[in-house]
Image 1 (cartoon, rainbow, N blue to C red):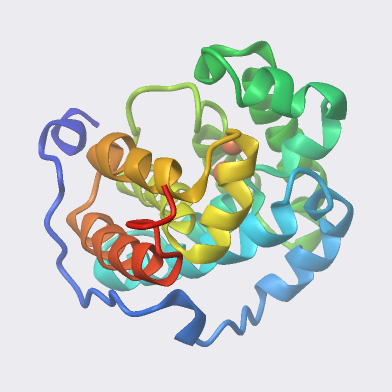
Image 2: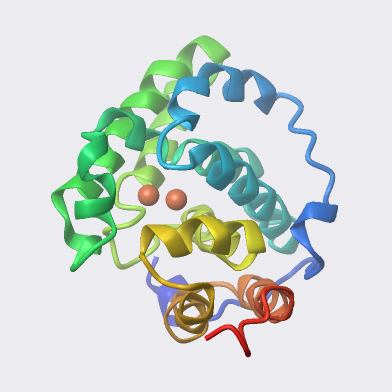
Length: 222
Ligand SMILES: [Fe+2]
Ligand SMILES: [Fe+2]
């Protein structure tokens, strides 16, 4: 979707909520059955923190872009990193979060394994084959591909980044990259905000980053 990748950041067409994510209502309704199907996968690499927070941001992004297929965005976001549970756990940090980590074999592997999880759990929950392949198209390459194929793909990618700006995301992910919170939040500003595709995500990230920096005293603790 060339226009999507050229028109960045993409202006919102709906309501943009930049308040603390913890204040949202987190009832997942139909998706509770999907959560139940992937409990083992949530135990890998902090997925039990990363996936629920990312899903809440995905819901907000769908409010900001109501033209997107909401179910597709939410299911893809919930499942996108479940593949981490099916790779060599000893290599997740050493290979997946150090050096040229975006191109590490284990990154491609967790994307492929995530698609396998989607194809395993979604059919018995009543999702059609066409929908499942659309989910896999988003999951496959979510970390290693440069471009978003669709609006739904873009919203999943932005949700995957937005959780990092919340203080829970900073607490968890700064350790993965072996960085203190001050340096890590500096990186969020200089490296991650420019990667965001939608204006709604930029607004949410900017508001969250300011709150998290104040909360964590990053001005002094550096
Ligand atoms: Fe990932
Ligand atoms: Fe992720």
